[in-house]
Image (cartoon, rainbow over all chains, first blue to last red; front, side, top):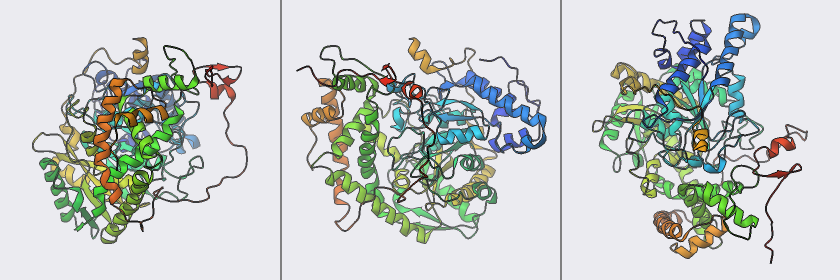
Length: 538
Length: 98
């Protein structure tokens, strides 16, 4: 890593410990005011990654650290600011604020693995549209974050490069599939991150790590360059420590993209203004009857009720709505998602990119090479979903499985439509439980799938969802997530309500929830530059 | 709906081009049987009158201007290939010898 001494202009110490705890919005202000440089901020985060990410008890949020390029972009921003004039005035609000990117999203100049052995060592020849927008805004990219292989999982334990640990308790899961992005933000290794959400992969990790995560309206953020799992469900979105920070990032990445044919042509609403507005007076907020109560941990339920009470006190009207078809959502999801995934993952065939494994014996035909490559390159969960999807799409079963699941999708959309005639925004716990122990559900796929019961309906209907910290569960002291859902194209409502609830809760806690997280032991050794390369060297 | 058994999994694995050991087939058949059983109710959820939704927010006729946009060079396209030869992807024999 480059040797650069970071000094905090706040006088908070040369290690930048105060700097890394600032929100992205606050960092942006300090950068614009010339109180701190982007190189100082970026180096402070790189130092933090070096201190807490590596080693056997490290968080392991990163698969690759992008030191040189991140510092170069930071230095460029600093030079533009120092020179002043028109170029400095035109800098984006978040210019110089660093960010981490989920390793499902392709980047020039850094490896993209999707958490899979089949893409080990692969470099994309192009940038995802969201990455291009980060570069246009001159946000230094700190590196690529860990995930369940091809985003398939709820714990990050299905990563071929080892699990990420939850900064609140290193023996617990950080959620998944975007556990790396959520843990990086929770452990102050990045102020912002990008995630992808197919059934809850941004929101559920947010819930169990005490961070904020948003799944935007389907099609409102380009998917170009996100390695596809289930194309009709996948959505890229922001990961952060505050609601306003997610709005700021959402504004950078959102909007129409001609490279994605499912991209909505609608102009993006002013999400930042919505987050700054913070007013729920007279708004109707609907509790979804089917998404709390039985099956939800008592501590989760308590924190949920507490949030409802706070919103009521702030002037919102709490109503109850029923979505009777949500009970079919999980089952329908586990037919549609694997069906689309089995098709999307057919391209990993040992021909155009990534791994090629030759069978041990003759004949050496391409079919046998594909079979050997995919056997060695894919992990168990990916194989399970490919087989399940192939089954659901096969002749004789198609109508009963895939066809029925698509009908359920219509029913879920109708449930949402009816609910949104009674409420402006819907509310539920994000996940039924707090973070479970690493390994606890690894051998029980069905138990693992149940984590996504409250997040899946939004993906099925394409509506936006936001998860924010709701406090700590009484029984285990671990973070609980509160989920807000809005009609399609009404993402601004999530930020408006989310910002109010966040400020009410923080007033109650006396500061951000993450201030209560245990301090992480910092190692002297630091991580290797790229964990992927380290694996290769073994 | 029919339950999924070991022979089904072996057939599906062949279709999906994933080699599986005997042990893997046994384990996968057991796991998939549980999952398939749990999603059974989906087929009884909706009546014949309910249309299918394939895409959450339908868009139709998405076109762009018919002009040459960004393209990859042959080198870029081949940059991640496991094997290449004279500007092409190189693959093992397509057909069996017999």
